[in-house]
Length: 315
Image (tube, rainbow, N blue to C red):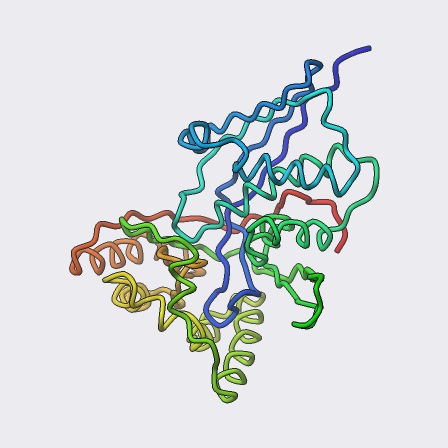
């Protein structure tokens, strides 16, 4: 019997939260991990992380790709007894807010989904990803691509997490400038600074602005996006963690961006523009703003990723 052909697919990076869309909205970014899966017959499960050489030196039991695969295999009744070789290539910078860990979990779940005989839906995989430690918003974008919203269906008192994923319309002409200061922060560090409660008025304003962000990204409306990216839930507290975040956000807008906000949990920033020609000036302004506060920053100019780890899955 001929050896099965290798399985290949891509998992995009992501920018979650998007200002007032805390924990809900996310964009898939065209900076993917490339996944190649080959079947073995010796029972070994080998994962080579060319995307992150340091991961090969870590305890393999904690590798997100491996953990995602094992959880997916349990969920979908996939046997791993014969073994697999999984190659992970590409680079999503770690500790920057671009969904690196969630992309790893999604990669493993994506492998299991492609090996499974039973049908699987994105909400099932997202509900499997979150208990592993993945972020639901980043995970949704990595699974589906494009602009996504994660809708919590379970109430706080329910023991089982249930979520629905929405893939929302997204204008194709958006360009994103990602600024990455020379500091890394863990998700736990960025969550500790958030207040436990919010005023009702702030909650209402946040809901309205999040809906405005969704429509602005669909229509390519820079003015609406600029007005709606303002946030009261997480950005004011997180931007105080790193010198230059606030100034770089302002500098991006002054240089022609349709607004800027923290990318995921940070410390990276994402600036939006419909005009590719503005990207170099926006990038330069953000780097200079960080430099004035004693921080070195690098930038990436990216487009939307209209693909995900499960491009043909139904919602």
